[in-house]
Amino acid sequence: MMSIAASVLAGEPGSRVTLVYGNRSEDDVVFRQALTTLAATHGDRFVLRHVLEEPRAKSRAGRGRLERAVAEQELRALDVTKADAFFLCGPEPMMVDVRAALVEGLGVAAAKIHEERFSSPAQRSATGKLPTRAQPISIRIAGRTHEVTARPGETLLEAGLGAGVNMPYSCGLGGCGACKLKLVAGEVVEDEPNCLTAAERAQGFVLGCVSRATNSTTVEVP
Image (cartoon, rainbow, N blue to C red; front, side, top):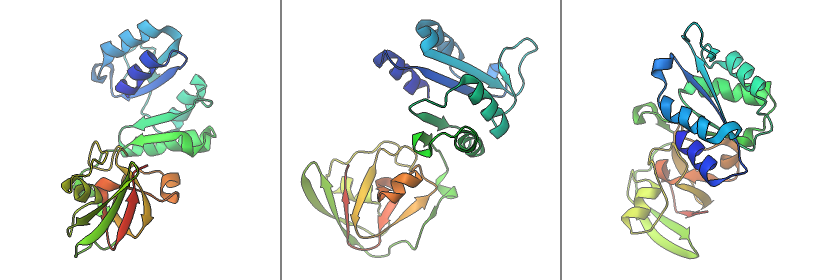
């Protein structure tokens, strides 16, 4: 969130950023001084709203945990419903509550909401039976088609990179969406949870880093 805010403010003079930042106390605020400096530098283009579970007596921060009621109250007061995009990052229960506050409470379109999720691989489970045989994979990228083979248990991304295909990726854990692929043909099983939205799934997108082909499969890098 810090990187996104700083980049937008520096590179898009016509854009505004509102950051609602929940923490236990003022002493727990990561990047506290950097955020204060950012706010002082960009004036009304950057609105910083702290929400603390244990605020100091004279604190001007919001009070409470960012559960649905508190989140809806804060967001409504900031009048952010017309924003072009919303970015959520934090503990899973918080993101569920904030998404509900936005969609159900404030009427924000779900397509405008983007989430960054982090989870332990041990907490994930595949959407179907994992493949036990090698599978042929066709990877379309930049107008070329690369034929590779995914070994048993190997993800689409691992198969492509192993064959020298320059596929985009970042976290490798299903949390950022950088390795998103369009499933043109075939079937895959994916590890869940991951960061794909319902709309992206409906359009046939999969994540290369957590998807494994169960038969002959063709994917395309968008």
